[in-house]
Amino acid sequence: MDRVDRSPETGAAPSRQPRAWYIVGLLTALAVLSFLDRYILALLAAPLAKDLRLSDSQVALVIGLAFAVVYAVGGIPIAQLIDRYRRKPILVVGVLLWSGLTIAAAFAQSFTTLLICRAGVALGEAVLAPAAISLIADLFPHGQRATPTSVFASVTSIMSKGAFLLGAGALAIASMLDPYVRLANWRMALIIVGVPGLFLAILVAFTMREPARIAAPNETRDAGDFAPFVRYLSDNWRLYLPFYVGVMAFGVFAIAAVSWVPSLLVRGFALEPATAGLWIGVIGSISGFLGTFFWPWLAGRFVRAGKHGAIFIAMALAGAVLIFGAGLGYANASLAVVLAGLAVAQFATSAGAAMPPLAIQAFGPPRMRAKLTSLNQIAIHLIGSSLGPLAVAWLALGWPGAPRALGYGLAALGVVTGMVGSLSLVWASRAARTLSQPGVAMTPAPQSI
Image (cartoon, rainbow, N blue to C red; front, top):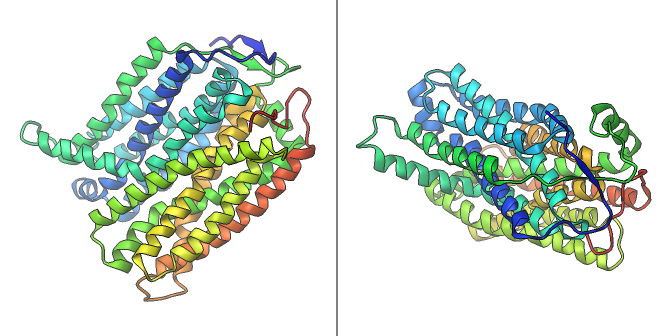
């Protein structure tokens, strides 16, 4: 592969023609499909386990830890390729890989085959976020990236709950096709959600024009290599260490909530699983969508008020909101208050999806943005998936036999992660005031966040 030609960042705004927004639309559509392909297996777990004779631990491995490990660890070498070479062909290969193996999983006859398919899906999906953040940064000028980045990032907040609604729709279509197709419904549902990705890969290949990569002043030819990246993190650890700790805190709680809120509503309030899923899907999607645009807007207000490190200040405030929403909401005996707590907590944790890409675009050198995004994915998915669900289960043991023990565990975890996130991000905001890197604008321009 040939390296992409670079153009120096002269302050002139890249084109705002519809072409740029068309690319954002393609990337956002791909993000929707990636979350659907990722989460649908949780919805299909019961019939899948029955047909393939899988144990609960095998199902958990396929859905959770195995996927998260491959997604996070595999993202590092993929991000290295994205930072060095053309992003479009890498993106096309990634989409084809995850879509094709989602379809292939429909024909799995054993745990091993299913595990291999899911590992391939994780590896393909690891391409999307680093490539998208890098591309959007080159499509829009420094002060106009917040809205397109928020559009892309909003999928994380919406689809963490909304994927279950779309997955239910795929199952309904599979049921309608049952008289005509000799496949189990769960197998047909995997095919239904996998096929659209193949078409989008074709659209990306033939209709997306990759923008020139904007180089920072004085950026050397080897800036995309791994050794300079390690040196850069070492030189700027006062910013990135607390930043990634804060991101991790948001990820731990967000994934814990996805894992246990349905069980809380079923066990603690005697809701039917379908009813619980509907409440979570609607409330979580709406509040997450609103938060994804609110926190960048708030950071922009802070910038206009002359505050440095505005991105991190806004995230720190979101951590404080998480303490309030989770701490007071999930521990309550009223279903209405618990649902309100769900809304507030989801609104707060959406900052963990919306703000890190903006921080990476604003502070990260252009040929290091994909690797910085990959580290962000590790903080959220690998550490979050490993710690979040287990932490709630462990904390709930403090109230043995209580029907709402999971709610108490979620409330306690929300307080802890909210405090860790807020304090870490305040530290990052202070580092952003004084930290500088030759050739990199460590403080965003006044009109940007």
